[in-house]
Length: 123
Image 1: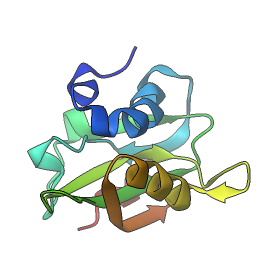
Image 2: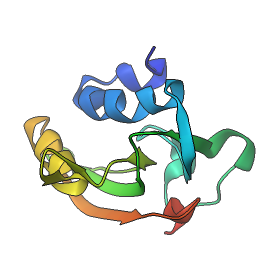
Image 3: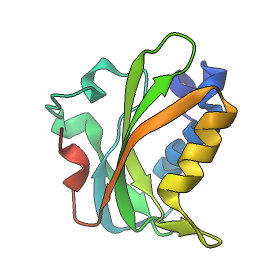
Image 4: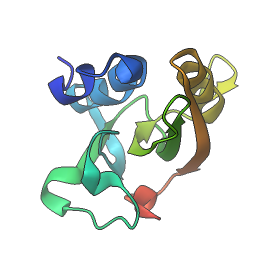
């Protein structure tokens, strides 16, 4: 099951599947803030709603991530926060997200990672 809010926008489908599926997989000790690109509460300055934006990360995730994306055609900015993996088959997580975003007509202008609970709440 994938979060229906995220799937409505085809441009973010790949990233949505990677991050939203983590809600339904076995949890590990790491906890991150989780919010979607279309969520206004995800924007900076970030003031998390602790009851709905805290996520137990799945066992495969070992970092929290925050990205700032820019759509190429309308130059709008979007923020995404969630659990991720530091690398997939030798490619680091931020590079993987940049490649996926480019294929969807977006640029990731900032990708920050950290590895302690709720560390991705920075602005």
